[in-house]
Length: 147
Image (cartoon, rainbow, N blue to C red):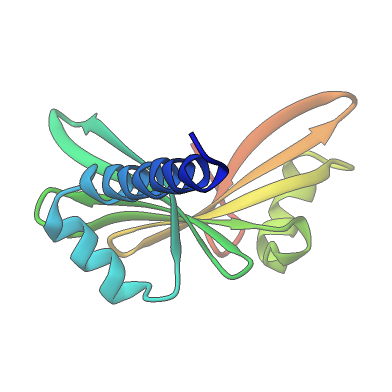
């Protein structure tokens, strides 16, 4: 084979492989889920899609990135958003939540946090470390601890 033929074959294999990866990434969630996602987050990129079971029903979790924002989204089969988890840097945790953590775990260091939105509920899941022990504590926006 000539170098040109080898290069052509290699290019075709690469192009075919890229097409297969793109098809798998978009084919793993139903069209209603993909449509809802694209409408709500037109500039976001899907990093991973997983099919899960919650409360006996099939849902899809999309791990995404939209600029600097990392977001996990849970959709039902019809494309309705059930839950949104936004990953927050430690310095973006609201003051009331920080105060609640200081009250409950005095002197702890915040390692990271997520803002979790379900229906009309917003919660903050804070990962904190104190004395070498890491814990995840959950708070409402007013800084009240939730179990």
